[in-house]
Every structure is written in C-alpha cells, then in structure tokens.
Image 1 (tube, rainbow over the protein chains, first blue to last red):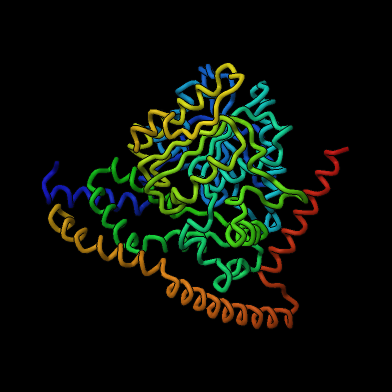
Image 2: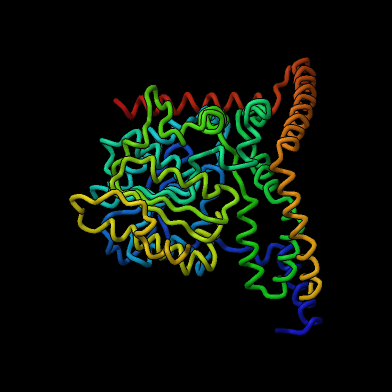
Length: 368
Length: 87
C-alpha cells in the first residue's frame, strides 16, 4: 500500500478525475439487444454463444430503481454470471415513467406488460416456457402475474428475490403509510407521479448516518482508482431512483400496506381476485437476513402462501443489494440461485413433495 | 482517513446509528414526521395554487398542467394504438 502522502496525492488525482467526469463508472456492459418495447417496458436479451439451458430466464426488475444493479460491472454482474452459466437471459426493465404513466396500476404491469414480455421472450427464444424471476417489487409483479394468469401463462418456475409480502414487517418505509400518518397523495406530485427524490428520501431515512459514513468510505477507497470506481458504481445506484406511478402507489398503500393483502394470500386484481395459492409452479423464495429494505420477516411468508408442491427458500446472510452485487453475491448467492434454476429447468418431474427448503438446499444450510 | 481515526469514527458512529434507527422506527417520530410532511405539503400546494392562478391571469399554464395534458394525450395515443393492434 502506498504511504500516507502518496495516498493523499492519489486521492487528489482520482477525486479530481471523478469530479471532472473522466472516471465515471461504466455500468450495464454485458452485450445485449433490445428485443421488445412497450410504453415504459423494455425487454433485453443478452448475447451468448452458449445457451445450453433451454428454458429461458426472464428477470423482471423492480419499478423503484434502475436495473443496472443486476449488471453493475463486468467483474460484478449477476447477469453476466448467469449468461456464463448457460442461461438464455432476458431482462424486463422500465424507463422512468412520465405523466402518461401516472395512471398505471398493478394490472398495467401484471396483466399487461409482464405477460406481453413473456410472450415476446418466448417468441424470441423459440421456447415453450420460461423461468420468471423478480427482484424486489419486480418479484411482486412476477407473483401477481403468475397468480392471475396461473392456468394460461407458460411459466416453468417462479423465483422471488427479496420480495415484500408482509408489508407490516417492513418497518419505517411502510409504517409511514399506516392510517393516521401519510396518505399516498401526500407524496404524489402535480404530474401524478411520486418523484424520485421522495423515493430516495425514504430509502435514505432508514439509515440516517449513511450520509456521513458513505463519503468517508469513498475517501478511504479514493486512492485506489479501481476500488473507488467500484464504490461509486454501487453507491451511485443506491441514490439513482426513478419516479413511481401515482395510481400504483395508491394501490400499494391501500392494498399492500394498509390491508396487507399479500400476507393474506390474495388481493383484488383486474376485477377479480389474484390468489397466491393458484401458483402451482416450482417456486423459490430468496430473502436476506440483513436486508433493511425488505426484511426477511416480510419476504418469508410467500413460501407458505403459494400453492406449489415444490416451494423452496434460500435464506441468505446478506442484504438487499449484497444479494445481487458484491463478494457474497459472487461466492454464495449467484451460484445457489443458478443451481436451483438449472435443476428446475431440466426434464420436468412428475411430482414432488412440498418442501420448505429449510432442509433442502445446501446453500441455505451453509448460509444459515 | 487512516486506520485509527476510522476506527474511532466507527466506534462513535455505530451506537449513534443504532440509536437513530430506533428513534426513526418509533411511533412518536413517525407521527411527528407525517405531520411535518403534511404541513409542508399543504404550504407548497397553497403556493403552487397561487402561482397557477397568477399564470392563468396571464393566460399561461403551469409546468405540471402542461405535463399532465401531454400525459393524457400520450395515453390516448396508446389506447388508439392498442385498438389498432387488436384489429
């Protein structure tokens, strides 16, 4: 390691380069093609010479953040890893919504855009069924899609990555919207959207001292250009929110937070009822012990609520971001996720006993 | 920051972080924050309404009114496109 004076000089050089925009972290570098687009939805297919796992994998990203966390940097990319493992990877992510999207509801996504993307991915891959994986709120969209279209959609497996189910266990972010506190319309602006700044403010409030800690972390790393770039890529993502459609936010507050409908296993949907018990496909619920955005207690109930006879779970010793980016993701989370999907993409089993995964998956045991 | 000052910082920061997170999760804090947010929001809305009234006198729309109009038009275009695709 360079001595103190050398490190200060390097910090000055790297800090100036960063401020001048010379060393901006390059994210989302894995080669891909935009294969379908509708409204704010974008469906990407990642290029690969080895798609040895024939069941395509469609990843549905959250609506509250940008998808490059899944493909952060070439050496730190969940998507690049999955492509390298032989998966035919599709990513459904979202452009920032505008006033035109303010009226979007859960139905817009789970009965419209996600099923549309499923059809487009299957046509593109010339496949009959796919694995549907959702990250964070994207997991809720995936589960609703699978529940509402249970009989018709060609879904082979369903995977939820740190997805909120019991909103009463989330803490501050949800509790602020309990009756008597904030109403959804207190956050919705004149264009009908929840501004990105409000989303960011909410996430920052969970760990108030981060405003001090993160600049210090950057200062410590700054002498090393590579480490500083890694830090800035990750920290930049945590502050890089997008607006949220107002109508969907009203539904979230009323149905998911106040009625806590998902924890009850069903919610009003498209004029009827979506029931998690109608999800009969193999299901993997992945959640994290150190997650402060979607605590384990919030995500865990899905495992018992779906109707799948093959419902497993992975309880990992990491946080919301550590699940998809960083050393733990590289060494534990990604291999475990890939292993489950690979096994469930092989020839179909005729029947399996209902498994909780507690005694089932070696990675879970290792992580616990 | 060198190793020792950082350790000292962490030794102070961790209990402060734990304490502040406990405060934030308390009902009293969340009630107070919600009230403060609503008061602030009401003031901002009153100001926006005043500014909008002033612009209307000049025959001008606000930025939000423009964006909302454009959004409504975009939604109509989408609806028409869907109808065309369905035929």
